[in-house]
Length: 232
Image (cartoon, rainbow, N blue to C red; front, side, top):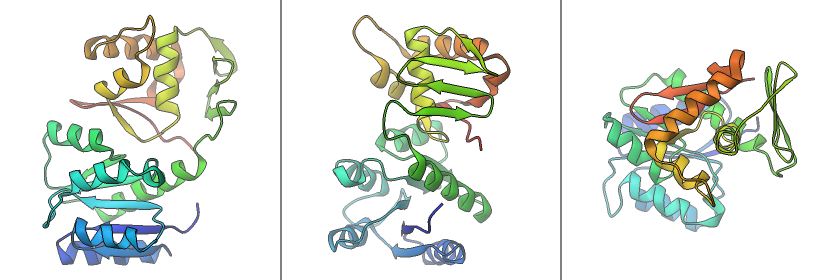
């Protein structure tokens, strides 16, 4: 994992300084901004950012949710990891943050060790994300041959439906990322494939059953959706 340039957007100075100090201790380059407006200025001066840590409730013309949406509208930052931090803890808030484009969501108060671990996961995933559909994805006893649509658990091939494979691939391509049911629908809906929020749960249950000893790699995030466990 490379040392990264991280932009911390947080209006509370004590929290901003603490996050910056801890990240710098891991030899990252850190730029801090107290508002989305200041963060936009950082981006506009040409600084390339490898990861964003954004507070939801920010002063100025944009809150963190709106700033995240603005980032995702720019091609250069469509895939850059975003960790949202906020005191808003309701499931609907978390869903809104993820739907806006956040890759992870941490509620205040949080442990700095947890934040640092989440940063490491996001940077590792961003640096190692598959670049071509021919890549072999391997997670412990589970392996996926993307171009051939084949899945193996402990070297034994398992048979998945088209929808199950699409769900598994979507999760496997972004380990640690929480997908809402709406995101699943938007990504796997297609010709002759019709899914609803309720049927996503059914497909996940069927997929887990077929994965057998590898089934715990898919984690349920209660009230929100699912994510693929980050496996080394």
